[in-house]
Length: 178
Image (cartoon, rainbow, N blue to C red):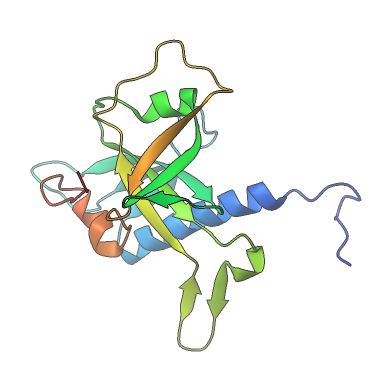
């Protein structure tokens, strides 16, 4: 049996392990897309990462802000993941128009941490997948409560891939289900 190093609790309990894996999942996709991924610590603004395109486009280096959430008990209905893990405060941190685009990335993970990744000499396979949604068109909640949850519909068509991640830097190319 593994014992905690400090003879108390593990620092990576199931929830922390799952969350860290989700952030690393996004960083792997960003690296594969050739993007800069800068974590924000501490997470005070509802943003986990700045993602930046490291080449100039129209006189600037395009950037976006990303909040990463993980989910091991996914529910889908009519082509949308029915994610209920955002507090009203976190929802408000993502909702509405922003100077810089802000996205929610939901990483669907296996319930068993031993299934997060498989590696052999030919490939590293990460389980399962990530999806994105913009809440720019959603109205913020008046008097948000940290204890109340908001359900967010995340389109199944918003599968996060290297291509779709790069497309998010050009909103005209980013495709989201209606």
